[in-house]
Every structure is written in C-alpha cells, then in structure tokens.
Image 1 (tube, rainbow, N blue to C red):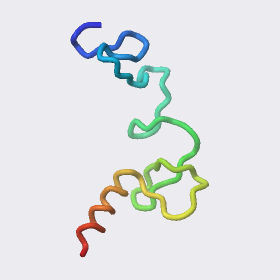
Image 2 (tube, rainbow, N blue to C red; image 1 turned 180 degrees about the vertical axis):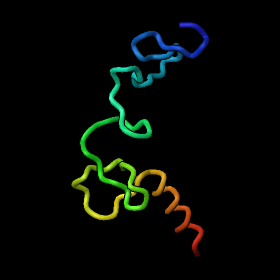
Image 3 (cartoon, rainbow, N blue to C red; image 1 turned 45 degrees about the vertical axis):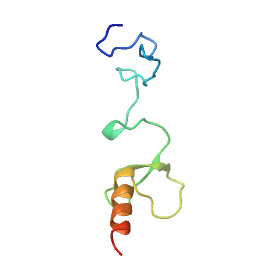
Image 4 (spheres, helix red, strand yellow; image 1 turned 60 degrees about the vertical axis):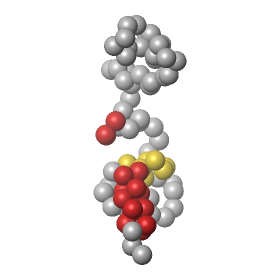
Length: 76
C-alpha cells in the first residue's frame, strides 16, 4: 500500500516486516494477548501469563516479572 504504514493484504508491510492479523477473525484474549491454551494466572495481579496452567510454582505475567526483577535488583 502507500506510505501510511499499511499492509499489502497478506500481513506484510512494504519494508518486509510482518504483523499478525487483528481484524474481526483474529482471536484475542484480555489485554490483546493471543488466545490459545489455558494460561496460568499471575500470582500477583491475576492476569494471564505466558505459561500453561500446568506450570508448577509461582507464575508471573510479564509486567509483574519485570517489576519484581527491578525490586530484586535494587534491594541490595
């Protein structure tokens, strides 16, 4: 398409990059996450994580994992 950053209809941009479809047929979960297998809940905020429900231990969503890493790094 033109210089407006549009795609060529197959999901690829003029510069060769690709983006996933986001139209009415694209399945999504809360906060724009791609729907898929049941994901474990974050133990802090209860949002879906990147891990399946069968993952053992304390699972964190990417946001809480990033915040926890910052707290750990600055704690001592």
